[in-house]
Image 1 (cartoon, rainbow, N blue to C red):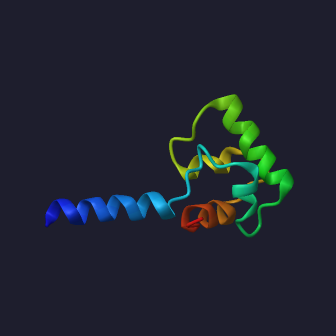
Image 2: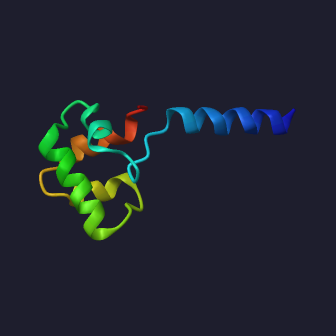
Image 3: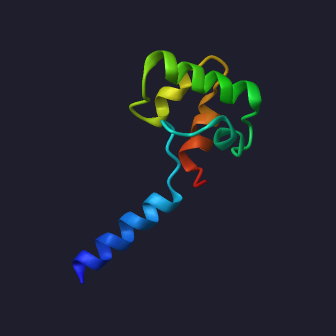
Length: 77
């Protein structure tokens, strides 16, 4: 029973999680407040600096506010 629960839990996380390290421009643009330019800046930063260790690092991207970071963290895709 426990194994079944863990399998279901992991599957639901995979289905609804938003992966900031593989998200495309279009994926980021689904989040309110992120348009073409911000999405492109996030992806360019990721390409230059490597994968984000956590969503808070996205605040290092010029033009991305803490408010946008919170929207990214709560977005389910």
